[in-house]
Image (cartoon, rainbow, N blue to C red; front, side, top):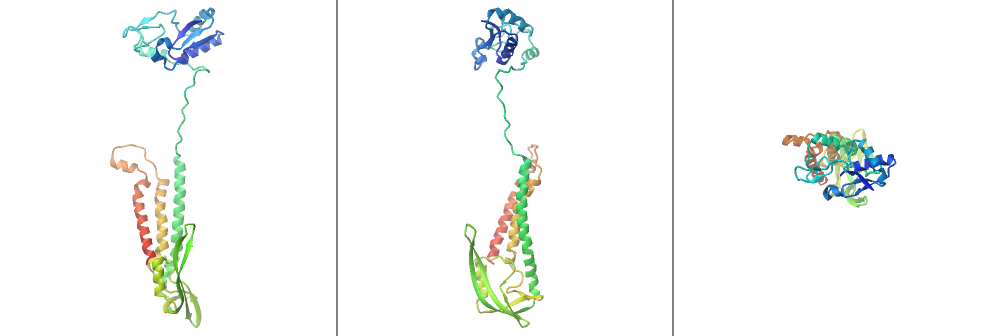
Length: 331
């Protein structure tokens, strides 16, 4: 067994081992798995050795053909900085990393250029890209949420517009007297949470042109709560006679409490709440991100997404609308 090449780079040593293997020269690498040969010292550098001494000369000729110098045939040199002896194939001192006399940085870089790693050499640790959120997918989700809130809000507003128009026009309808046949508050629960709701149920009868009619509508589209339901039952007790308005073209349609009242706007406010909640999702789905960094406070404000900038305003509007809705349920 004889040494033919030593270098701190195990990949380079492995490359020249593959050359010897292709030439039929049996060889191995000593100190191949040294954890940190630069710290341990030159004696622990990866070293290429031939198994059979008879193959030594053939291996040296093969390596010289690749312009490499065997450390046994060359002349060792002394570092001018720390006076440490270095093998002939070292371009820098193994101890202080000073350059060999007559060697420039360019020459050193060229000689240290690594050849392709052999198939058995250690593969570099693969790097994996961390998964990141897709901006297109996020905007799609924001758009779908915006669409849901907007459709619910617009549906509430559209469904109550007819009631608001009817309540406004009822002030000009003809009137007659009606008798309250029944008057009470109906309590019912809905959903798994068993939420309790209150609704006044008042039945009245009236006569128009000699024809008798029965009605149950107090005010179209009214947003009822416990307080407003109690007030309605008190105003229209059973057995009392109260004036009412009826539609001229259809006397069967009558209102016990005609005109616009705050409670008529309950469903409209509910629709406005959903539309307001849709605003930040709309801004997030249609806005463009700004990636430029700057120290300007105005630019920092502009860099924020539209949803972040207008979120406080949206929260304030929703809170205000909710307060109005609670007030309407007590009117």
